[in-house]
Length: 216
Image (cartoon, rainbow, N blue to C red; front, side):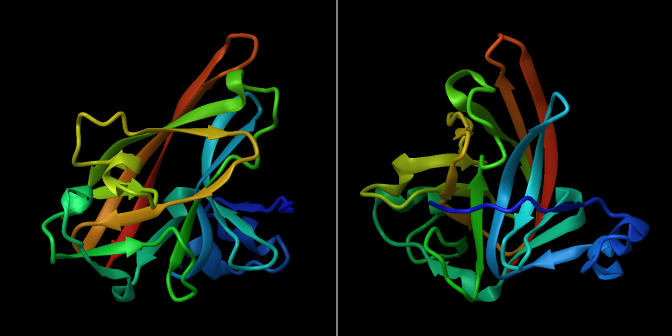
């Protein structure tokens, strides 16, 4: 079973960062993450509110960031040629180049995860919350899907498909990975929302966070 260590949230304050051992002013000034295991959508519930954090597990101990303080980078090595066939049509024309942060770990690239490990079982109805892709701004689109017989059918998020629910249920204790694809190089912002219903019927959220991605 995977062990988990509670880690720090960097909120963008130089003074606060320096007050914690091991952190430097560079963390507080803004951080670019381009390699290693990073839970991009890290869901937490505390003091009656849901939050989304970025949890960097590429360092020991792990560090949590406010999404506003982080740039997530898809390096040029993430370039991926779109295969032929309708099951890949959500990525663009066959033979075209997109940028894929893969579901399977590649030590030379960012490995983006989705985590409900901070959620406690018995808190939310069905032990799940809902994460929704609210908007994307950038030169292309963002699509997140799982490997499978027909990847087009395994999409959680696709900013270019208004007919898709663009919502993923995240369970308490869950840790998951998928392919994150950006169809063009450039800078993107993506806003995600998280909401849930407590076991007593009280609705929580939606709470939103905006992420910045630098691609290519």
